[in-house]
Length: 175
Image (tube, rainbow, N blue to C red; front, side, top):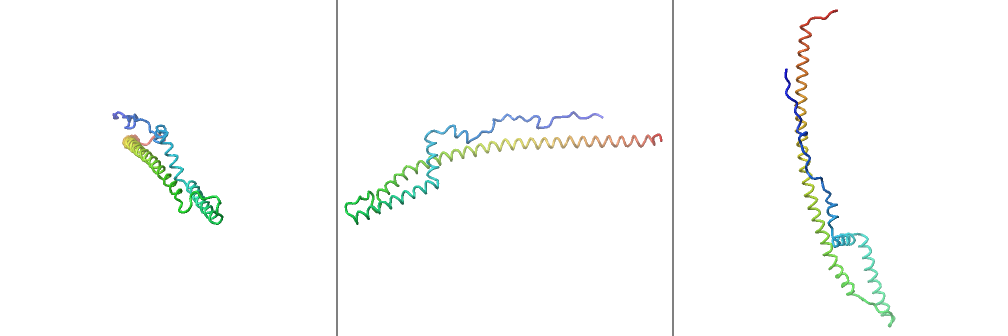
């Protein structure tokens, strides 16, 4: 009885010749300019609770101190004059100035983050395509192994049947 030649499964012929998986975070960090790093730090600072709490305390102190100075000047003429009495026009100017500069800086940081997110999505897609191809090869290889196992089982059953016939036709052995 001749047996078919044994062949290697699909996994044996699969080439893992794709470039290595990249870390988008490392790539983005290496290519960041000074301005981008500053924009990220400003955005992180402005978008934090400590910033909001500190700014709120400073605004409250600014207004309270100016109201105090205005009241003291009214009660005691010649007392230190408030530099920004109610309606706090100078404070509004300072806050407008802050908003005029932090808004665009935060947007720069968001644009850079959006670009990084696009790179991350593209990288994820590439990794998913590679993984899908490798899974296909593994599934083909498993199917090939199933065929080999079924072939081996069929041969074993054929041999067992042949041995069973040979032992039954030989008759009872010596006692």
